[in-house]
Each structure stands twice: as structure tokens, then as C-alpha cells.
Image (cartoon, rainbow, N blue to C red; front, side, top):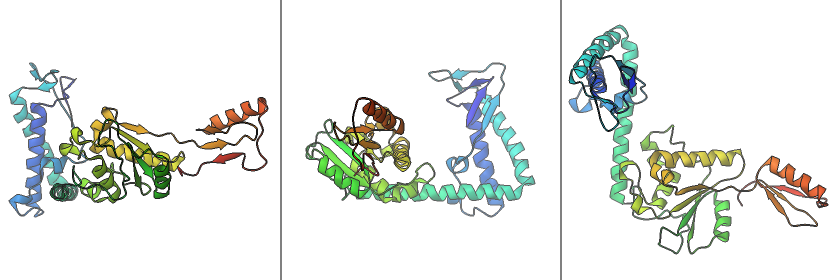
Length: 315
């Protein structure tokens, strides 16, 4: 919901937004009850259920606007709430009367959001009771943990695939480096409701391993590793997996990114096997071509077979 007063963007909302929210919630619930889609008082939809997926712009003009808040971007005129509430009630109420089919579709969408909210709450409650998913408790079985318990020196490598996880375990320093292999592409949390997110095995493993919890349960003091390294293949699929992991962390544990705990590993894409010089690694097609050109000019030679190797995975 974007709000403006006299063309000033009121980032912190204010009385005009309060009036809009109150009218929208009341009107949608009244329409749903009239249509027989809500039969019990406890089934009434919340404002969050109704506004899920909604984009709204509220703009008012006032002779004497009163701005509040630290940045003076919150409208404080008390009379505005009632005015906006009446306008929304009148205009949106008329629209519902003229478009009952579309109105029922809005109710169905809000009801689905309410069901997801309830399921998510149950999932959170279950996770808290188990003391696992939202912080503390047992660690995922696939995690090869490190020996140190000092988060400042501990690192966890989230690795794409069990085979690459095995290679990573062989090359790590077990004193301070932990390995968590995940199976392929994790759930795209940007498109999934939170109840589905919390049911995903790979997401559960990541949240449990890090130990911070998510959203309002997030506690940075419980972070088990102060360096979280995302390791995926150098190809397009690997970039997609890295993006999905970053999305998960950004949406559910954003402070980890904001405070510099998250790193993206850069695996090489090519290995150049010179027969008369040390091997070289290239991270892009352009870098490979440049190394080959420079090598030939310097008198370096490639073997007859497998002179350049393209890595297929982290292993």
C-alpha cells in the first residue's frame, strides 16, 4: 500500500492508510457474510488475508496536513481516517454490488490466504515444540559439522548435491569448516506460502543448521557459523540454485545478508592442462580464451587430448 498526502510520499502511512485498511477489511467481510462464504465469527478474514497480493495507492489533498514520525512521513490528521473510510465504503461497496462474481473470487483468494496463515502458525508451533526448526535443538543428519563451537571462526558450506558434498568433506578443515549438502534446486520461497516453505526438507535442513530461526523468531546470537558460503556449479543451473538460496536467506533471515555473513563461492568453469607449464583455471569463457591466447603466445603447449577440461560440477 503506497500512500501520499499533498503529493508527499508518506512512507510510514498514517490516518489515510488506517481509514483504507479499516474500510477494506470491514467491507470484504460483510460481503463474504452476505454471500454465505463466511458463516462463523471466528472465520472472519484479517486485514493481512485480504491485502495479500493487493497493490493500492492512496492519495489525499489537505489544506493543513499534519506530519508525524521521525522522518515526518506519517500523516496525523485525525479527520482523514473517517473521510477515506467513507469514500472506500461507498465506492468499493458499489463495485461489489455490481460485480458479485469478481467479489466472490476476491473472497476465495483471501480465504486461501487465511488457510495458509493458519497452517503456517501450526507449522511454527510444531517447530517450536520440537525445538528444532525455528532455532536450537537437533541438527540435520546430512550436516558434517565442524569441531569448533566458536561461531566467529566457524564456516558452513551449503553445497549442491550429495556427491559434491562428499568432495567438499574430503577437502575441508574439519576443525572449523562444516558441510551441508542439499539435493538440487530448493523450493522457490518467493512463490510459495510459508506453510509449504516450512514443510520443505532442504529448507528445514538449512534453517536447523544455521540455528537462528526465521522472521520474528530470528535471533542472530544463535547463529552457529559466522561465515555461510553458498557453493554451486559454475553453470546456469548452479547460478539458479545460488539465487534460490539467496532468496531463502533474504526473505527469512535477512540480517544474515545485511551483516555480511553470506558469501557466494566462485568455482572455476575450465581447467587448462598445459603440458609444459602449470595448469590454469578459468572462471568464464572469456577468461579461458584469454589464457589460451596468452599461453600459446608464450610458447605453452596443450596435450593432444583433454587439453581443456570443462567442470560439470563441484566434484
